[in-house]
Length: 166
Image (cartoon, rainbow, N blue to C red; front, side, top):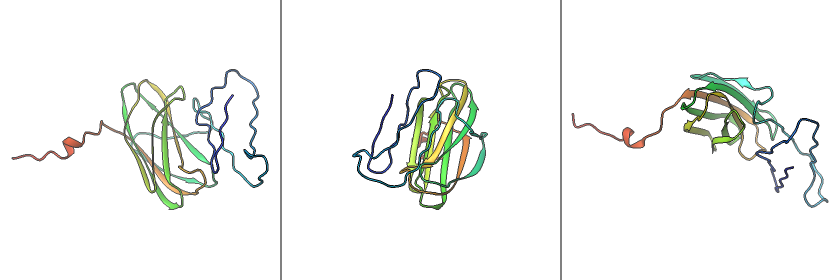
């Protein structure tokens, strides 16, 4: 159904599973002659398993304890909402990466940074439960972070630079 390969971190970011049942994942060296350890992480993008609920205005502490790990958060929003999401590294060697998925599992917004990743204005097109994946951008780092979800507004830089003559 889906495949991906990479010299370091391979990721299948979205794979449509056509029917219920048991599926297999084959993890192997692309060339077939190298050996070594690896980590594997699996998560559903629509209706994720074992998410941590996060509310608007809430900041939570999290940690990426093993390479390839991604932490999943969920929140409920209304159609037309905009959200601001911030993930800040507090220790370790992770590059903060956050992604927002709609209730159907489609990627809406993403951002990464060496320290603090910020999605300044992510438009949510429908009412429902949205998912946030928090991870190390490269897939091999570990460390601690904080994540904050807050109602955002459209980022308009010209308003921030406006100076009144009064």
